Structure formats: structure tokens, C-alpha cells
Image 1: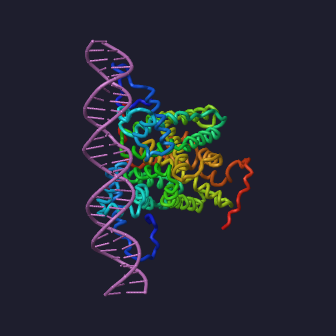
Image 2 (image 1 turned 180 degrees about the horizontal axis):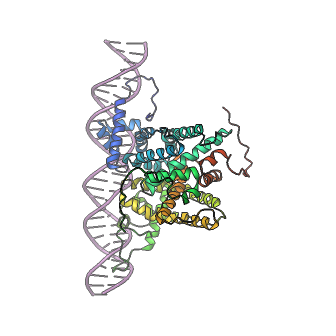
Image 3 (image 1 turned 120 degrees about the horizontal axis):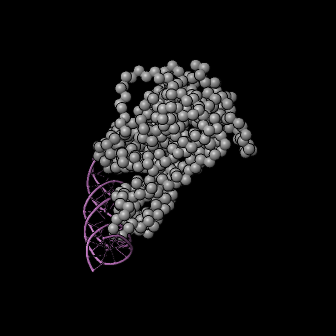
Amino acid sequence: MAAPDPLPSPQRRGRPRSAAADRAILAATRAALVEVGWSRLTMGEVAHRAGVAKTTLYRRWAAKSELVLDAVAVLFDELELPDRGCLRADVEGVVLSFAALLRRPETKTALMAVLAESTTDQALRARIREAIVDRQKRLVLDGRSRAQQRGELPPDPPDAAETARVVDLIFDVIAGAVVHRSLVSDCPVDEAWARQFATLLLEGLSTVSSAPGGDASEGDTQPEEHPRG
Amino acid sequence: MAAPDPLPSPQRRGRPRSAAADRAILAATRAALVEVGWSRLTMGEVAHRAGVAKTTLYRRWAAKSELVLDAVAVLFDELELPDRGCLRADVEGVVLSFAALLRRPETKTALMAVLAESTTDQALRARIREAIVDRQKRLVLDGRSRAQQRGELPPDPPDAAETARVVDLIFDVIAGAVVHRSLVSDCPVDEAWARQFATLLLEGLSTVSSAPGGDASEGDTQPEEHPRG
DNA sequence: CAAGTTACGCTACGAGCCGTAGCGGAATGA
DNA sequence: TCATTCCGCTACGGCTCGTAGCGTAACTTG
């Protein structure tokens, strides 16, 4: 997955590339992202942290954006979708999991920066899709098929392309809403928001506009600070 | 709105700042964003294009991110929400308008880059909220109140805070979905997608999963290639 | 084992951009 | 007139970039 630049053929002659160096570089990149963020991250700094020469980085990654993409893509693979019993709970769960991932400093600064670079780099866009976007659609596919087995959603339409469009739509809506809430509006994605979002997704606009917060079955006895002003 | 850095008090002595220089700088910034994108945009280049000295830029904007934010924020103010007769049409309209805005190279590269910077800059986050996010919530407020007058949505709940939460939620869902579809998934936001998204938003997940694309009133006689394989 | 091949660490380098200082001059208010 | 503030210009140290060149290390092939 983290296959660097001029893909070395699986079996070639000469000295092989050091897998340990790869791991050290990617780990150093993540650590540096945490401490200084994207814009102040330099290739020299990463090389120094990883204990390798700067030239070794350039032999594997042509640009900072590709290195950083490989460094954080693996973090998105840790997302899981355990069966929480019903579609609503599955939606709320994946929303909270994804939000937690986006709370990590290395994840959010890298994701947005790489996306910014990708707006002027077609190859990088494709690489992002392969490394992150397409891989996470499995979450929607899993949750959807489970909901279908439970009878919460109708079975797939005969047209496979139509199914793909629906899956893509749901993916963009869920991921987009969480990203926008977290990183653009800069507001917390907590249980209450996840509940409200799931209501909107499952039942549509008119329901979420009337029902005061859905089921108020909150078990946390958090004493809700009085907001002054 | 495009009020630069050490806010000069409204009436001071000495030579006033040149408003023409402000306009030239912001226009030059947008033009440079179109041509070279965020990462290759330099302060010297902007100054040269605007016909001002580099020091003049630094006297007004402390960082590239603030300059670029001011340069593109005005573009978001051009978004409008004409009354298209029903809530569904209003949703589809704002989705397509916003997508068209995000298709402009200067808008997308600047938005994502500034958001990336903001992940490690609290002040910039606040500035983004003021300059873009909060200002565009008017679109949701307008569309919502119109839908309420038409009887398409229930009236506001008694709790004003609950209303604000719902408006924020809808804003994040619509804006987030369009941004994610456009810039992350890298797929076109066209009429078909807008229709499907509006269906999801208005009627919920189960409807969008069954109905084959809503009204199939597509006038394009595109002959649908046979997918081999 | 010897030869060929590829990766690595190290050093050094020109180039470009950053952000600031310092100057003389221009445009305002007192 | 005088003080104040902005402007354009030049120059500068500092940092990062990405590459070249070298000797050496690791591994494959014959």
C-alpha cells in the first residue's frame, strides 16, 4: 500500500530498499505533522527524525504531498464498523469514529493539505482516491448490506450502477458532513450531533426539524455547564 | 469585510491606505491562484502582478493564508438562493450553485489550503468562520423559512437553540456533501446527483435506496454505453 | 568467489522564497 | 509648516528546496 515512487519491480537485482527505513520515515512524518503541522513540515526535518539521509526521501517520494499521503492513509484503514444492532446505531457509530480520527492533529492537517495540493494535481487526486476514498467505501457497503439483512433498507435495485450511485452518495454525505462540521464549522461532533444527523439521514428533513433531539436516552450524567452570556 | 491586519482606526492622521492597492492586490491574488494554485503562489509574485511593493503586502496581511482568505471570501458572497417554488428545487439549486463555485480553480485551491492552515491556527479558524461559514448560513435560513411558509417544513420549535442546531446541521450536511463529492471523491456534481441528494435529504435513506433515481425525466438522449466485462 | 547492480549516507551547491530593515518621498491632518 | 502615516525601492540573512557526486553497503547472478 505504502508503495513509494518508481515502483521497484517485485524481484530485482542489487540492494533492496530498506523496509525499516520506510517505516521510520512514515512514522517520523506523522510525528512531525503532530508537532509542526503541514506547512512547517520540511523534508530535511523528516529525514533527520527518521535517521535517514534527505536523498533517501527523494528517491522514494517525488513530493511532500505524496509522502504525507502515504503516512496518514494507513490511519484511515483503522476505521471499523462493528455491528451495533440497528442502522441508526451503525450510522452514529461510524460518525463518531470518523470524527475521532479527524480530531488527531496529523490526520486533519494532512488530509486538508493533501486535498489542497490535489486541486492542481490530477495524479495526486487519483492517488488519494486509491489510498483513502475508495478504501473507506467498504464501511458504507458493510452497513448497508447489514441494514438490508435486518429489513431496515430495501434490497439492491436491479441496476448495479444505480446501487453504486447510492453508495457513493451516502458516503459523500456522511464523510462530508463530519469533515465540514469538524474542520470548517469547527464545532464538536458529539453524541448529540451524531444522533441528530442520523435522524436526518434516516427520516429526512421534516422529522429533524420538528422532533426535539430524537430519543433523549442519554446515559451520561454530564452536568451541562451553564453558558453565561 | 476585506479589512486587513492591524486595523487602522476609522479616522487617523497621516496618509491613508490606498483602497485601489487593496483591490489590485486581492485581484492579483485571485489571478495568481488560478494560474499556479496555492502552493506555488508567492507574495512577491502577487506584489508584482498588483503593481505594488512586497512590503505593502506585509503591512496589511501577516500571512499568505490571510491574504488568500480575503481574496476568495467575496466569491462566496455571490451565492444566492432564488425562490424556485418548492423546497426540493431550492435544495437542488443551491447544491448546483455551490458546486459551480467550487469548480473555479481559485476557489477550491484556496478553500482547502486555508482550511489546512487553520488546523494549526486558531485565529485563522475564527477568521474563516466570520468571512465564509457564518455568512453563508443565510442560505439555509432563507430556504428554511420559505419552506415553512409553504408548509413543507414544520414551524420553528420553541427552543431557539434547537433551531440553531438544526440550521447548523443542515448547513454542514449540504455544504459538506458538495465539497466532499467535488474535491475528495472528485466526481461531478450534476443535476442527477443533486436530484438524488435532495431526495435523500427530504425523504431519508430508505427512499433513496429504492426509487430508481426519482423522476427519470432526463432529456439527454445519451445512448448509455454498454459496459463490457 | 567475483562481477554487476542497486540502495544508502554524506557533503556540497545554486536557486528561490521568506520576512524585515532602512531609506527618500508622497499624501494626508493639525 | 510640521507631524504622521503610507508607499516604493533596495538590500539582506536565513531557510528550504531538489539535485549531483562520491564512496560504501547489500544483494543477485554467473
